[in-house]
Amino acid sequence: AQKITQTQPGMFVQEKEAVTLDCTYDTSDPSYGLFWYKQPSSGEMIFLIYQGSYDQQNATEGRYSLNFQKARKSANLVISASQLGDSAMYFCAMREIEGSSNTGKLIFGQGTTLQVKP
Amino acid sequence: GAGVSQTPSNKVTEKGKYVELRCDPISGHTALYWYRQSLGQGPEFLIYFQGTGAADDSGLPNDRFFAVRPEGSVSTLKIQRTERGDSAVYLCASSYRGTGMNTEAFFGQGTRLTVV
Image (cartoon, rainbow over all chains, first blue to last red; front, top):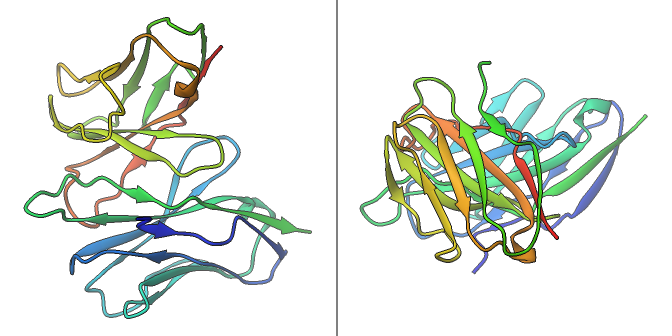
């Protein structure tokens, strides 16, 4: 079963506007972490933001915020005031503890390609 | 450099050949991960090292794939008898300890492997 689902293969947004990238996840573990990464065309994965399952408040990092709805198992990324440099692939990922082990590995979604229009 | 370094950046090989992909993690990072990213997909976990030992190799697709990290720093992913389906970008990531829930993993730029 897919553990991380990103249902938007591609998104467009006008420069300076806000955009929401969707992410839903599936886990039975009460302790998990959710990450968003940006992957420009150059290929490197750039960490954007983290949300822990026990965090009471939604995470924010500059123009990035995470709309965490635990009951709905969603962790949508909101980018405010989009810039041309935001055009990239965006991945949602989850880290969970499997039984007694925690290897720290990340499970990624399929990604959303964001294009910012001037 | 300060980041995770992967070499080569591109590798073209013939079907059936052996290849080695190298990852140089951030100095001091004890955790090292290999992921494979097929075109249009998210990265898929292959193997995790804590220090010199492979703590989790559950993602390796078959016994043609093997990875080592003999001194707890540089790691080499080895693929024997390459197949066209092995073509992908192979990403390496490292983190300070690796198992903290919020521990950030730093990724290299990847090696694009093409098997012809």
